[in-house]
Amino acid sequence: MKLSRRNSVRLLAGAAAMPAVLAQAPAIPPVRVAQKGSAAGADVQAARDELKSAAQRIAAVKLPRTVEPAVRFRA
Image (cartoon, one colour):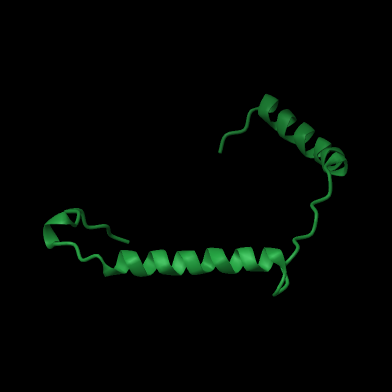
């Protein structure tokens, strides 16, 4: 990687300013986990049930071979 004098000054200035920027950033609030039996827990369970039923409905549909893509993806 080539680094010119101007780019190196920009890089150093950005690194020097980073602690000040981070000090002004608001704190990230902690993630709240819904307890079983609460309203949020019921919403989460309803969403999970809906996803499971949708997955079962998709799995029940049989597609002919001609519908599948003709592309083979390699890892």
